Every structure is written in C-alpha cells, then in structure tokens.
Length: 212
Image (cartoon, rainbow, N blue to C red):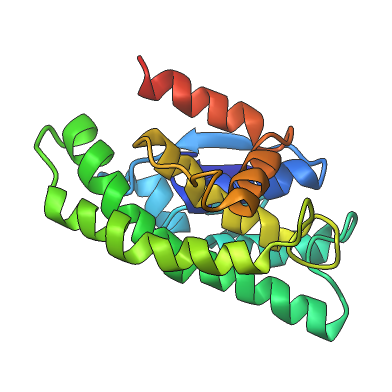
C-alpha cells in the first residue's frame, strides 16, 4: 500500500492513524498538492490528498480510502455495523472533515503554512476569526457530547474518534489547545486519542519538523 501526501494534512493523518489501528502498514510518499508530479496526478487527478495505491487499485480522498480498507480489512471494526452507531460515526467524520478542519485551517494556514512554506505573512484577521468565532462553538459542542473518559461511539474506538482528534494536531502546531479548565472533556479526549500508537509517531515527527 502507498499513501501520497503528508501527515501535516489532517485528512492524511487520520488515514494513517486508521491504517495503524487496523494493524496494517503503508509506505508514505511525501507529496505537495500545490506542485503535483505526474505520478500523483494519475492517482489524484484533482490533486487531492491523501491519494492511495493498493496494487492496481487507486483512489483519493480519506473517506473513500477508509471505506475501501474497512471492506477489505474488517477487523478490528472501526466503522460499526449497527445502524445508529454507523450513522453517528459517519456524522462525526463529516463533522471533523467539513466543520472542524475548515475552522482549524484558518489558523493553520495563516500562522504556519504561509510563513513556513510560502514565505509570506498570513492573514491574521482570518486566523483570529477562526480562533475566536469558529472554534468556540465546536469546542462547546464536543464538551457536551464526549462521554467522561470515553469514546464518541459505543464506548470503544471508532473512526469517529480518529477523525475528530486529527485537526487538533494542527491547532497544537500554532499553540491553540483546548483549555482544560473550560473544556476538560475535549482536552482529555484529544490527549487520549493522540497518545495512541497509531497517532503518536506521526505527531512526534511533525513536532520535530515544526520546531526545527
């Protein structure tokens, strides 16, 4: 198996953690979607990461990759079979992908990507909007929703947990973290999921690069 992308992308990071939780291994080919090479574009024609190759099969988009792998490697199940539990898991992944990540991206792009990779200042007004307007209701929702000391669905690890935790790594890279005093469940949840062996090496690798 081959993943095209970088774990700095929360979508790629989620996919790598999912693969780790399945007990699978994959090669990662660092790929810049802003300067794609021809091989990458044959797998991801719209330059979307992660992209994926498994033998002759290729696909892009984290949800599509995970759907394929869940069908091919059903154990341990990370997408529940029960209708209600599956629906809730899909909701949390969608929530992470379409609500949490866009809010996080306002901070990460303008405070990290623009100055580190593009050689220009970011738009701090947009970053502030993400931090002060977009993130608080997200954190409040999660604080109300996360069970004490538990997982998001069925009291066990699912794709929901991996998806929701992933963008918090990017926030940490720009020194924005859930306040344990205001959002203790969120802070504990994020710390617990990101400390798992499926996540911890990728997080450590990113931090080493970010702090270099």
